[in-house]
Image 1 (cartoon, rainbow, N blue to C red):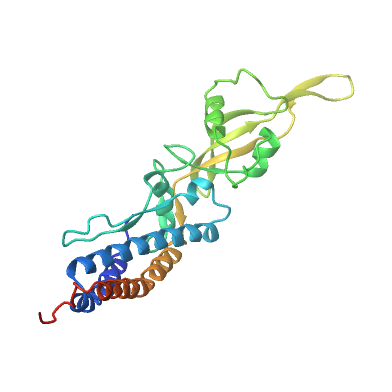
Image 2: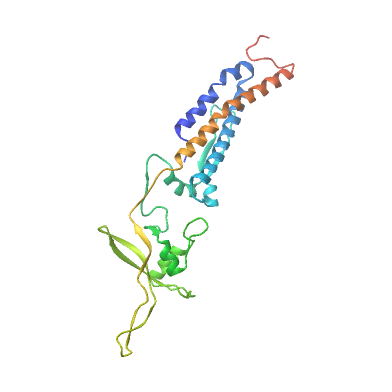
Length: 267
């Protein structure tokens, strides 16, 4: 996930505006050095600003999400191309891409989620009631839960059974004319009396409870795009001050060395 083109253009325009001042006062080499420094710092500030935006844009983001943005400094200052960049780490980009872009982002089965071949939406009340499962500290399904439910639905029981935990199977149900797949909790069975003669029958001690439902697609608003763009713009807007500092430092250094002369001046 690279910087938007308009940000790249802004950086080129801002640094390019200082070329004449540097070339008339010092040297091309010093100008390239100043551009590399300014672009590197802008990339650093951009990544830091985007990271700060993650904390305020997402609800209780995980430390993993807080490490999504990285930057690279401009290392090659000898050629005609100077480049620094802000990007998202590959694993985090799988999630971040749904929060960026133009318009609603669509996630379909086979992409990131609780399972590879479907998008699973938790029913938190039923998970707590039948499995004793609650959201983790970041509001997500604890790791391994979806895999365990899948194994149990396929008939593989855990070696250690947790008292009070309901059994799980996979079923389908009609919702709005569509057949949706659910992981369903089956209540324990027990005897219930019938009539007045002491007879009893085995019944479910409760009703079936849906735990996770598979949906065809999920849509997300690109809530991170605007904060990201704002962070990049703030970083670019700090470049002129950096270039001015670099120019002042270069002129002061030149003036402190009697053997150096201003670019373009006579012998």
